[in-house]
Image 1: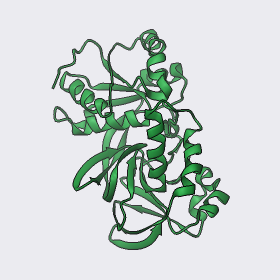
Image 2: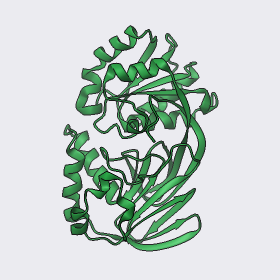
Image 3: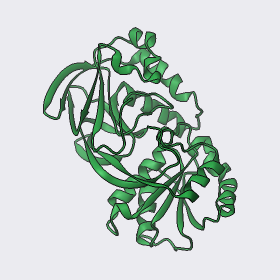
Length: 316
């Protein structure tokens, strides 16, 4: 591991590509605001996927115990993975702050962390902490099994297909607040429900699956509420199964994905649980916190009281 010189109290991990390049374009403004608020920091910029994981681990090894993510939900996911994978100190010795620069800011919606840089930095300076659960999952890439932690929501099926399409476009320079909604509608044209076995805390459900979301938080995809009752510190996961539902029904009921009433639909079922296993005859793509990962078979679980986060106002 390369050592990061500890020249400040905070380690800022910046994704320059977040928010259609706003991470890079706005960093001078953000760094100036950090200095104005009296926050001393060292900065590291990511260059490729998973850089934030290794930078977080290196920063902790160098003595940093306060880390601020400057990016989107995907960058935050990587920082959380770095905190939980580090072997230098207990994860709860680390305080995590967020300055949202991405297009969604889905995790921050739960904790009153705004997209306004000055207000977000004010929250970090105030330093109000809470202990937060973390989800974990195993998934497949070809014949290999890999593992990942998540802080907000993981999913598979239609949701992960939209995420995969969206991330491809982001990687090729296309972004914006409406990109997820655009890809949601576009993906409906080609998507086919898949015969799937889901085991939730031992209960077996077999269905032609449209999508499955596993929530530690409530918001995903730029404001959708597919696990509308999830709590980040109850030691449990919320699972929402959208079963054999037609695409025209989805379009007709699209508002339900956003207004928190999704569990009132007769073909949509919610569970509060600690373990979910998924197998399917045809591979189904898996994502976590908006990051495309791999495919089924997959398994999801919960680590209660896993990390410490800085928040503004708890809105759930």
